[in-house]
Amino acid sequence: MNSDKSSTHIDIPTHTFMQPEKQIKLPNDIPRWEKSQAYSDLLGFILALNEAVKNKKIRDQYHSSPLIEKLVNMLDQLDKWIDEIPPIDQPQRFGNKAFRTWFNKLKEEGPNLLKQVLPPEYEPAIPELFTYVIESVGNDTRIDYGTGHELSMVAFLCCLCKLGAFKEEDYTALVLKIFERYMYLMRKLQLTYRMEPAGSHGVWSLDDYQFLPFLWGSSQLLDHPRIKPKSFPNEDIYNGFYKDFIFLSAIKFINQVKTGPFAEHSNQLWGISGVGAWSKVNSGLIKMYRAEILAKFPIVQHFMFGSLLTLEPSTNPPPQQEMMPPPSTTMMPPVGDTSMPPPTTLARPL
Image (tube, rainbow, N blue to C red; front, top):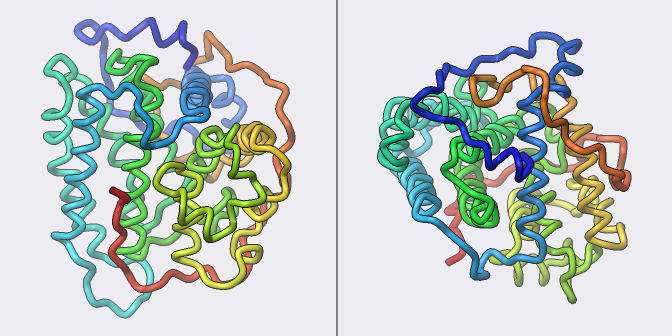
């Protein structure tokens, strides 16, 4: 979402909201998607957030509006529900069916939670907005989670920006407060309910579940005097700095849930550690995100389109930037032991 675009907000009283639905039915629909207003808005928004967190730490001082804090509190509430709905005893190792109980609670009570968070004038938009919230936490049939669900959280935040709830000054906090809190919620869901990775163990991504912590996280580290790409697999580095950098928080989590050499279970990330500069990592990850997430039919076939994010042709196509090639252009599923340990208490850093 370009800054000139974000200054033209939807007029809520006169706007006709709608229930988002899937509209990408066949692989042949991908070119239409890539030329759509939704694609333009989402990619532009991701790039704007990437810019907003450059060289910023999670615990730095930056603008944080009351709405940001309320959304973080809403995610805290969803976290508490996990404690109230423990996993059940069942024969199969993965996909604990207690997740469906948690998911149904969110489905039933979530719209009212969102109503309490947003100013009253946003109430007409809640059904459309909440679709992206419920889509962002995983699938209750398959009990899985992946980068398509992550994209739905981006869509939720992007829609709020299109409605004028957030301004450009909020962008840093959207990543380092809301998205960071969302990541910890997703990790707790994954561990507690033994959620399967959506797709073939991260074949479309850098790890089993996420992509954007690495993209935005590399922007945070652009000019860091000590932490270079070659050093992020180092245990002392990710344990010492994960409270300030979402990239390192993601690396710490991977090492918490996987066993064996890092180069084997996270081959894509290991390849990135060989890149000389964070600027090349960041530009490469942008290109990789476009190619391996936004252009992949198995992911975007599940995306929901409504009145705010539409498949109509874009009036402001995203810039075709000259970008470094990704560290690896062949996305291979990680090898080695990808199993998770028994559920553990996953504390957020204070």
